[in-house]
Amino acid sequence: MDDRALDPSLTLLLDALERTPDNHALRVHVANLLVAAGRHADALKHFRQCESDPKVGTEAQLGVARCTLAIGDAEASLAACERLLEAAPEHPKGLVARARAKHARGQHKEALADYDRATTLDPQLAEPALRDALIRDASDPRARFRVVSGGGPSPEAAPSAVIPETSVADRVTFADVGGLDEVKEKIRMRIVYPFANPEMFKAFGKKVGGGILFYGPPGCGKTFLAKATAGECRAHFINVGLHEVLDMWIGNSEKQLHQLFEDARRRAPSVLFFDEVDALGMQRAKLHSGSMRGVITQFLAELDGFASRNERVLVIGATNTPWDLDSAFRRPGRFDQVLFVPPPDRPARVQILRLKTTGKPVADLDFDAIAAQTEGWSGADLEHLIDSAAEHALTQSIARGSLEPITAAHVEKARAKVRPTTREWFSTARNYAQYANEAGQYDDIADYIRRNNY
Ligand SMILES: Nc1ncnc2c1ncn2[C@@H]1O[C@H](COP(=O)(O)OP(=O)(O)OP(=O)(O)O)[C@@H](O)[C@H]1O
Ligand SMILES: [Mg+2]
Image 1 (cartoon, rainbow, N blue to C red):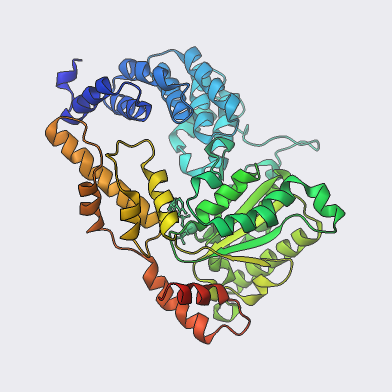
Image 2 (image 1 turned 90 degrees about the vertical axis):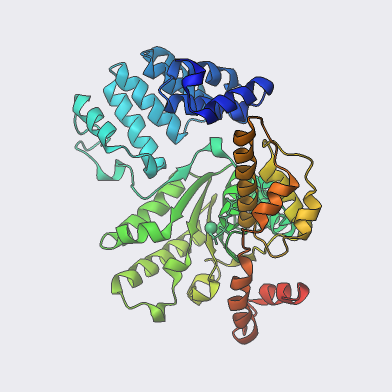
């Protein structure tokens, strides 16, 4: 097919690529569009050029695996997957790609194992049709269960459906988190160093591990910071979205919950992250459902167990409604370290803006000026701002037929539409800081409000 027959935006992007051949992010993007257009052989050439770029290499390798398989070269596809998995053995998409390559080569059982591992790590990758085909083709339809010494399929060995986990390859570190220097320093002192030097801390009679709770307005980096903390500790990151999994737990919840903690222990060093922990820690008075109460009791028991015998597993919780959290959660040995994650201050906003524009075509933007105009914006708001500005630049590029970088005008246009989201949170939080702060648990909020004249 000739490029002129392509949709116009792809043609434009190919032009832009000719002018900036080293823009690997763009090249991978174009290659993905070519795949979508069914042009696997062409896409493959682009992917191959980006395989060794640390920024986009993983995506490029996945692209190579996919395209080679599409053009009937399962050997090359498998080789691409092996390269990827060598660097990142637990990369969920890499495992799915290898499952496909092995399936094509007739290694059905191994393919099924890869598929099951991948979907345990990231349940969103589940493709029932693929799994059905793998099971059909594998000689033993119960290959999903590992046989333990007593014989017979062991449900213990079956992958738990509630444990998504990011792979080492997606490692985020503090360098990716803008600002929050004080919070980072506290995390370094209380978590990262003890994790790295457990012996030293033990010598001084200090425990390693235990629970830590991040709270603060939405979009200011709690989840991101938890992930980065795991990255800094070079630990597995096990992310449990409580709202999604609580339903699953009803009925069999206590056992599942125990399983989750056991899994974290097996994978130590690991960070077991409970996002939206308020879902679980709803003040017990507000809870009517008996089954939920059982889950909470179990959760607290697990935390206590952790405090006494656990090593090198860190439990992190995050919430933006700390006032919904039962005080039982904050007892010593549970979430006894509580950290406020505030909105980014001006220098932090500059940093976040820089981080979010890295790798994108930008005219010389005055980040400090943008930061000055975005008081009270969260990191997520700023990310949204840059995304919208990038969209404006892309639309203009397509209209003009040339690559237009993001300019101050694009940012300004975007800023008129994006609404900062932290003020509303503070209007609720202020009430707690003023009227329900007997134990001083909202001092950080009160401080922040005072210092920033909220
Ligand atoms: N300090 C920061 N540095 C860099 N990026 C940030 C920062 N804060 C937020 N972001 C960006 O905003 C996105 C949303 O942040 P995150 O999910 O961590 O917020 P949150 O505090 O967990 O919000 P919520 O309470 O809604 O769960 C992140 O994925 C990240 O890209
Ligand atoms: Mg979050």
